[in-house]
Image (cartoon, rainbow, N blue to C red; front, side, top):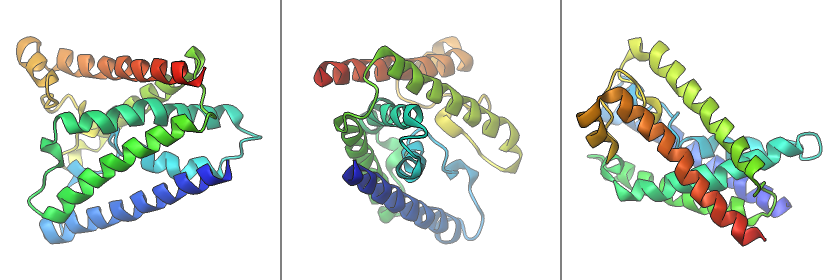
Length: 209
């Protein structure tokens, strides 16, 4: 278990340090001192950074269920987000090449974190574990919505890509938006993620037997 704590905490530190660099670069090099809220670090792909920082310091004896659920979230939702980001890399490209490299490396690291979380055998591979991870996902979506509605006055903000102020831009779901409206596009996107995570969870469950 100690080696996993070290791995996740190291990943968290690396991600946090690189995120600080990204924010400084975007603010002072790209935007000449103006902060762009579009890049506020609270996307689905940002969450592994926070989990990797807090998971190693949470007592497994005092909070065993929380330990399990965070790992389950990483092996289901983190792995899903990391892999499917490469199906549409348009949002990973910047005019400044180091930022593009950072984005690609970030999502590769997400995949490695998700796989490692599953391999710990400390996650919850049961239906209860999946529901716990999905409840965490729902809470994060609610928080993202709160940010979208309350911080939009400061600039462009589209956390989790579900802001009602912007049309859905994610591949496939943008077409749904064109056909049925933005609300349907957003909800279809939100609901598709737990479905995909469920597929990953079933694969992990089969592996863990």
